[in-house]
Image (cartoon, rainbow, N blue to C red):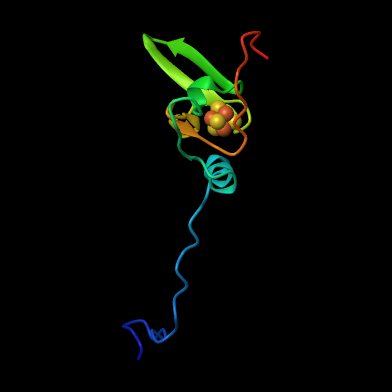
Length: 90
Ligand code: SF4
């Protein structure tokens, strides 16, 4: 079938590829999931927390840092790279 301009409209269209960010790739690779009370991002040594304009933001230094909310992590979640903070903080 042809459209008004004479172009063939029977061709198959490719669905556009979905873009996946590096944070989503990390989370899928290391099974970022809901953690337990002891084993969660809140108790991991890789968490970076900071206050900005009266709100606290939590990031993971293994996932990478950005000024975007896409890099925010949840304190109750955990991934396979969890490493418990000791009393010395190491
Ligand atoms: S548990 Fe995983 S995602 Fe959470 S802070 Fe530690 S390394 Fe980052």
